[in-house]
Length: 217
Image 1: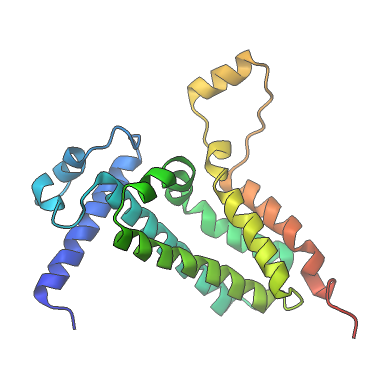
Image 2 (image 1 turned 60 degrees about the vertical axis):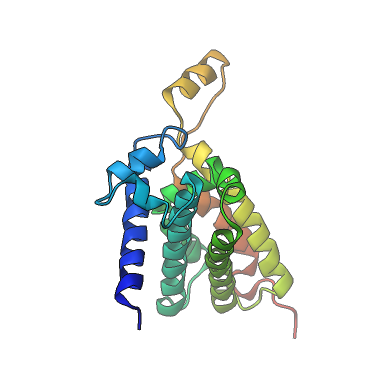
């Protein structure tokens, strides 16, 4: 059972991470400082160093929280939906990611710095949660598309996860970027997170729907 000090430490870490998330909604990663984060907590900047050594460690904890929430959503799909077609699963999975804009933004824009400037033990905790999301995707595929072999599931995963790193820049465009593309005569069709992810997943899974790729008995 957690001690009072452990509960306090957990509560303070959550407060720091939540403060960081709130700032990230309206400010860029580069503009957010430990001072800015501390000003939004009930205990100030100096106490932050008891829990995180760098700004990047706080953001890594935020990304860990986002991946954990996504894994929970994937688990709920796996436990409560049966059966699902390729279109239904694509819809359900895209809906889970539509809620994770913060996760997609961090992946696309800041992941390298977060990992490089965080302590190894913090990075290992994050990777554990990240691995859980990979596992949940695999378990969902095993359940809803039993004809997928281990190799097929691996190929799906290695198509989906790298793809997710590029989703945010394609769905969130600044006014400056819009003007630059107009000057360059670049046609830019707008897609939502849901639309762009759902389309990919449906295409990847179509061959396995209704046993199409099952080996002949």
